[in-house]
Length: 119
Length: 288
Image (cartoon, rainbow over all chains, first blue to last red; front, side, top):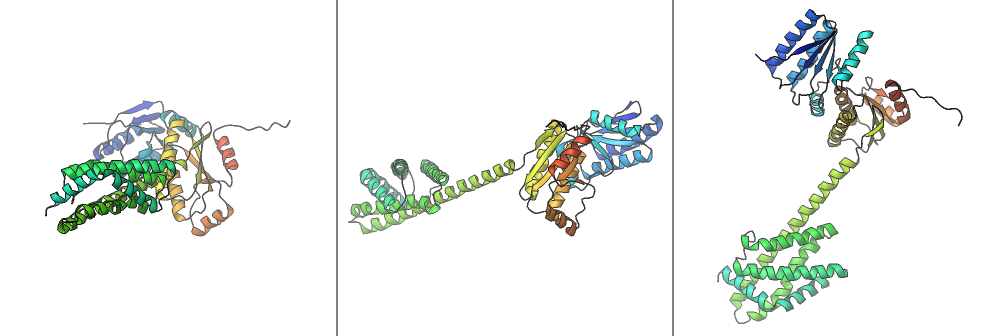
């Protein structure tokens, strides 16, 4: 079955979504990610959606839920690389991902996570 | 009495009296107080001549009662060109229509003298030619209207693009000076421009300056908040600056919630805080 790879970089987990998200894939990712956060004792999660140019309300809610779950497990989440069209769509859908940190690219996202982990 | 017969009448008439009809038509146009400068007069004369000869050859080939046919392609093309030119020069629609309608006055005296002995043929031909010229006249007005509409649409588009520049103020700092009322269409353009620029420059902070926005109502505030939310999703923070005292009062009276947004009274203040956020330090040299 198709899966989205989760890479470990020290205390961080990197999830790069390179394929079109469908609902089941999103649910699998949520399961895998929560498992990995616990197993690897990750303190930060980086979700790179720069290759995603289509989102619906379900995927938007999934991202925001995943961030909330990671927070419960004591890992902060940064969503990076959102396309302008995706940002506009999410705002029009009323999903502003409150409580989720965002950054322009992976580099800035890592910097943001390291800053928040030092505190 | 078939329409083919009328078409043939028209064709012969134009062939026979080409020059005098042209002269008379041109006089009519002048008399209708259409203001010409010498250049435009020359152009009009040329158009008259072309139209008349095309009309003649089209009448030879086709029917008078339908100008949508292939035979009338060239005539329609010329008329479209003439009325587009006039639309650009700022002529009124009636002036454009008169260009075609005044051909009637030029044509009918010749038609009458030609068919003096056959009143029935005269009546039929008059009827057919009137119908034809009316169709052609309406066609010019329609083209005129369409080209005016196109001009207006293009100007609107240009205005949209003109009024929403995104300026890079400093490394990682963008400014978005908004001027004029924010409606949904403009917000869309502003948002797209801002997000595109954030990607291009990798900016972390965007200052939205609303000094030039005359009024802020709930709708405008909502559009602003949407833009800010979208920029945040791309990883850039927004600061609103240039809030005038009246606008601050309006915002509070309307109950708009701007608490999650950094707001500053002037662009200078916003720029200062943006510099601090990006880690820049400012020192004043006291020599000056």
